[in-house]
Image 1 (cartoon, rainbow, N blue to C red):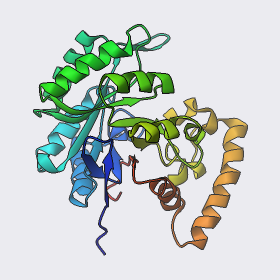
Image 2: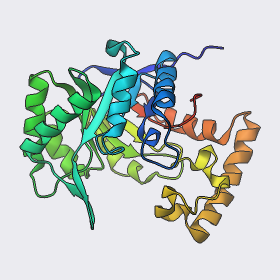
Image 3: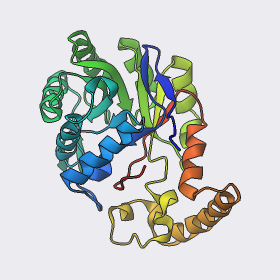
Image 4: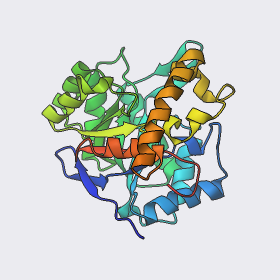
Amino acid sequence: MAIEIPRVKLGTQGFEVSKLGFGCMSLTGHDHSVSDEDGIAIIKHAVERGVTHIDTADLYGPKTNEILVGKALKHLPREKVQLATKFGVESMGPDGPVINGTPEFVRSSLEASLQRLDVDYIDLYYIIRVDRKTPIEDTMEELKKLVEEGKIKYIGISEASPETIRRAHAVHPLTAVQLEWSLWTRDVEEELIPLCRELGIGIVAYSPLGHGFFAGKAKEDTSNSSLEVYPRFQGENLEQNRILYSKVEKLAEKHGCTPAQLALAWVLHQGDDVSPIPGTTKIKI
């Protein structure tokens, strides 16, 4: 039976996306990277079934994820895909990512993403992390210019504080805030979700399946995977979380669905201004 994916509007500027999006990060440069052929097939499969909100970033791969998405777009009607990508990480240093939000870096990053994706414009362009050395107003002013030039249509921000979101939104309306939101990540409900709704900003929820925890990682050995960096996948924390998972599993059985379906349904039912972007390396999403 064909399932029709509902459409929702993010922000107040008229940007419409599929309520269920697709996060492409895991397709390249991670534990279960896939071939270009399989990655293209997965993205095509999603879009052909109505999942038209496609999310990538120059950081993923790095760079190779955008190239893969660009190849997939060659097989799809561009006007039917809501393409989102992100910028802001200049390099990876010994103490973590080096963040750059200067106007010059904004523009050079955008031009590079357009080239890798091989498109004329990007629908939703995010600041992936906030540069504390550059006033957010300076970053937003350059993004505003890119909107006026038609190179991007809408602006988003990821992992920002409430104050930063307010300041950014005052320069140019933010269309979306991307944040982690799932059954086991709910701290955003205290301030960030109410703020987005106060300002009329859409919410894009990444890792709605808990980095795959609710999709089967709860039962797997994750000791030699990239998930090991997350405290929830370590030692006693993981064992306690597995107890919680068993309760979700039983509830899912009661409702005739999988734990992943139950966890994703919870996020999908948080409002008509929310678009979760689960990822997968399998052909069925």
